[in-house]
Structure formats: structure tokens, C-alpha cells
Length: 442
Image 1 (cartoon, rainbow, N blue to C red):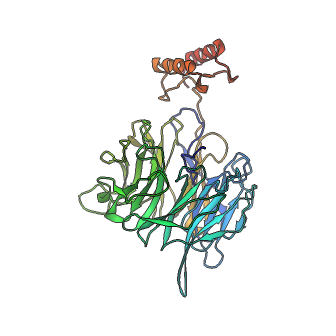
Image 2: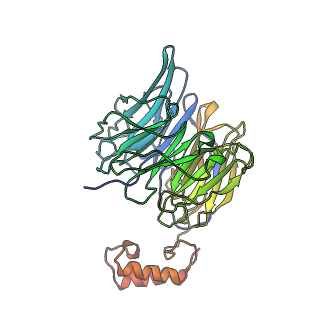
Image 3: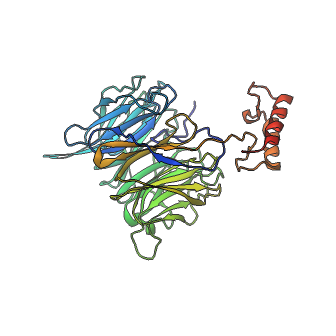
């Protein structure tokens, strides 16, 4: 038996760029046209051809749909395929729910009708070519707002968790396979859960849930009992006073322990203003005091984590919204300490955003919704990757520690030491490493 320890959501979590110190964002002059009010997006390889496709949900008054833009392989996109996934979709997540090798989609929705609100969860299976079968609808509690996918019960297939904002709980859908979900089981989350992420917070081998509660209710960690059942959240100390809006789970200081990056509204007195902060994890579902970094006027709505500058450390990107939106890029020096890298001013109100290598040049690009104009803006990272293969520690410097790392990897026959790429570990790998070491980093 195997288990999957990482969800596949709307952000691609790794890439192969070599170490560099760069994040040069340029807004494309030609946006992708969508329907009215594009509010959610995903970048994922839905047709299994090796490049990132774009999925956009737009929330028009009468013609809501999911548009699938297949990537032509060069960062441009074909005309969209259009599918009905539900009205009032709040979030999108992708994963191989039926275990057939391609990515399926799940989306919570809420639609107001003359008879009241209709809440539910849509699941659409991929036909293998980036088109999707008709949706299957599962019941939810009130106002489902955010979704994550992961192997919650450690049985090898992917399950679903949904935050139900008005109900104060998280609904868990266990996959009994293939893509047949048991009736929802709900677990109390505290008042108004607005955002959800997933990861092993206590290092016990199963996936826990990190939930952001509205206002001063803060961030909580719902520990997994090992079978896909969950406990009431443990409050992350100090998180409530900063009014978090969103959170992302990542190992920010490369210690093997997951940390929490939060986008804070900062609306109460005696706390820092709007900021991006980091709670470094201790490995037991407790966290150190928040490290607030970027502070600027304007509420942060979302935060994404990814190695944006290709140096081996997880960085952060956040959006702020008003008539003049902003993208704020924060780079990580490896300790979890974020530094302001770049701010991109937008002339529109930003909506759903996703990070991935769109154009196949090994750096991380961005797509972001121009909500009021019915467009998706492609924000291209213009950095040219700088290869430094001998920098095995990923710190941008070649020194004794890289030699030590190579010798350890070579002795353990770790693939990272196979510098010739022939599957063998011999003199030629040592020679190739020493040549690369002598050449230095660009």
C-alpha cells in the first residue's frame, strides 16, 4: 500500500529551475478573454502533455461556466473548452480522484435562488484529454467556501475537505474509490472558516488541516487521527490579533517541518498593519511567534507559496485589491525571513491567481483575473535561469559544504550525485562534479 502525502491543488508546488536571484514580472499586453467576472483559476496539466493548462471559472449572471484553456506548449493558449460545473463556484482544486492518471476537478458552490441558497460540491472526472464528464453533485453544509484534496485516511486514494463558512465546520469526503465519495462528515472548525490548506503539521505521517477563521478567530490546526477524522482546531498562538485572510502551508526554513504563511488584514488596534507573516513550525503542531514582513496599505486577499526565484527556498506572493491592485513578491533567504523583492502595480481589481511555469522556460509565471473586465492577465517572469549544478546546498555559493554534500550523496548512491546521468556512480561523476565546481556559479 502507498499513500500520497501531498495534495494537488491549483498551485504547482515545485519546478526545476536552478539557483538564481531574480523575479522579473511583466504583465502581458494581450489578456485572455473569458466570460464576465472570472473569480477562480487553476494552472494544471489537464491534458497530460507536460505543460500547464489554465482553468477559469467565471460567475456571470446567467452563463456561469468552467473554461479550460489548453496550453499550446509555448505559453499561449487555445480557444477554451467550456463546461458547466455549477453556479456560484467558490474555489477549485484538482487531483487524480479516480486513480486513472489524469487530473479531475472538484469545486464547492453556493447559488442563491428565489427559494433560498443552494449549496453543494461538484466533482468532474477528466476524460484524459482535458475535457471533463458531467458533474456529480454531493451535499455540503452552509456556504462552502474553500477546498483541498489529499489522502486524508492514508489508504492511497485522494479525499476532499471543504470549509463551510456559515456552518463553522469542515466537511470531509472520504474516497471509497474510484471517485465515489462517502457522505460528508463534518468537524467543528470554529467560527467562519474562510480558507483551508493541508499538510502534516505534527510530523506523524498523516495530513492535517490548517484553517483560517474570520477576523480575530485566527488560524487553527485540525489534527488528523490517522484515519481521516479530525479534532477541533488548535489555535496558532497570536494569529487572531492579526486578522488573517488566507494561509499557505510550506517548509519556509528547510528544516523538514511545515510552516504557515498568512496574509493578514491587520484591522485591529495595537498590531502591525496589513502584512504577510510566517509562523515557523516546531514539528508538533505548535508554532513560533509570527514574523511579519511585508506591510503596506491595502488588504492582502490571498497568499501563494512557491520557489519564485529558483534558489531552492520557498518564497511568497500575495495580492492586494482596490481600484489599483498590486502583486507583492517576497523572497526567502532560506531562514524563513522574507524580503520585499518586487511590487507589480495593476490597473484592475485582481481576482483568482495561480503560479506555474506557463512558457516552459523553467521559471515561475502567474495568471491573475481582471475581475471586472472579464480577462485573465498573464504575468510572465522574465528571469533567465542560471545553471549552477555543483551548488548542492542551494545557497548560491560553492564551498566545502557542497563538496561534503556531493560525497555524502555519492556514498549513498543518491541520484543527485549521478552527474553524468547514466545511472551509475563512478569516477566520471566525480570528475564531472569537480569540473562544474571549478567553473563556479554564474
